Image (tube, rainbow, N blue to C red):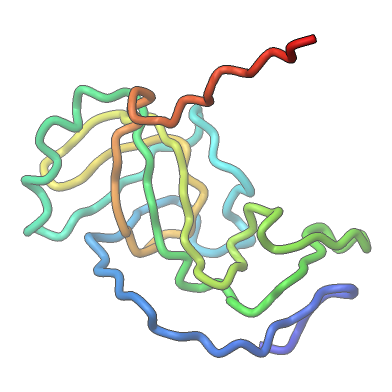
Length: 158
C-alpha cells in the first residue's frame, strides 16, 4: 500500500511472524466495510454476535454472569505500515501508538462491550466497532479485581 495522507510516515519494516494466533471464530456486525463502521463502539449500539468455532463453545461456561466483557479481534483488512497518521486529514499528525486507529503494526482490536446474552455458540454483545466477518481472537470477562492497583502515593516529608 502506498497511498498515505499528507504528513504521514510509512515504515519499511517487514511483517514478521514472531507469534501465531488461532482465531476462535468470527464477528457478525451490521457494517460491511470500514466506511460504514463507527469510529468507536457504543454500549447502546446495535447487537453484534461473536460466532465461535464449535470446539470453543464449552469455553463460554460461566461467562453469562458478567455484564461487561473484553473482545479481542484481528483487524484483517487494515494496513500495517504507518508510523504516523493524520486521522482526520486535517494536517495534524500523531504517532500510531497514540491512536485507536485500526492501522497498526499488529492490528489487534480491543473493545469493552456489554454482554446481552449467549445463544449456543454465539455471544450477543453491544458496543463493537468492527467490520462484519472480522476474525475473533479472544473473549475475556471484565473483572476489575484483576486490574493492577496503583501503589499509594508517597507523601513528601519536610
